Length: 258
Image 1 (cartoon, rainbow, N blue to C red):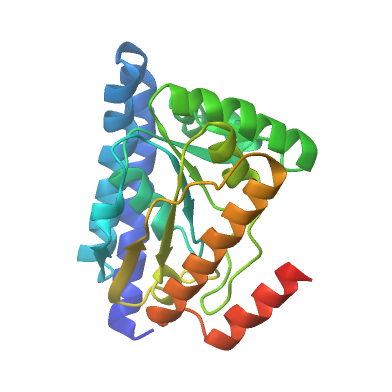
Image 2: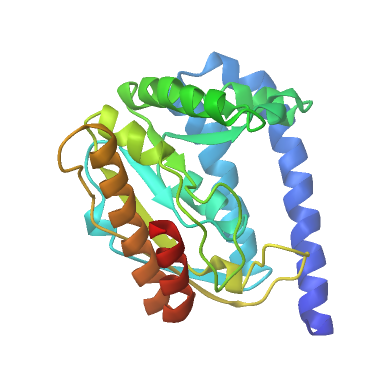
């Protein structure tokens, strides 16, 4: 980064961290008196919008969204590419109310975890994969029935720009068992907000929202098929916006089929 961009990045983190601390404290005292949807807008949506705005104004990370017309009226399961922290802020601000899959340990962080617990996240035990899938299925279905979007990062963790990870079937299983579609989302946020380090690069994040995808049938085979179709769409979209090479996509697809 240039010296100017380095200073802008430091300023961005100072403003983001200070606003996070203040907002969490305020939320702990205000949120309990608000109904869930208003609570989400006050605690999450407002702060996440401010984070995206700070990234745009201070760090120079703008964004463009295509495919918004593909968003169904009824909340469903969102399967999004995971490259950085930016898309977490953006998606939580763009969809409301939204329930996100998080590590259970985050619930115990003072103030932050306390505020988070009032937003009905899907807290899972990642050290126990079988228990985590069960928690996603049970809590996720409840959130969908309550009218919330459920955000799942099927790769399980942030994958560096230019790569794509294998998609777990937890999100598609939740959608199939709830008789709802999945909404695939691709983006290239990792080019400007890398997975590792604190550097930020100015530019325009391309967010591409795909068509809602429905299962063809029921059971494990339908879940696997829907998962493969979502993976193929995200891979193709990543290639089209320059966030993944066709060769890398082909290698991961062949590994998934092996």
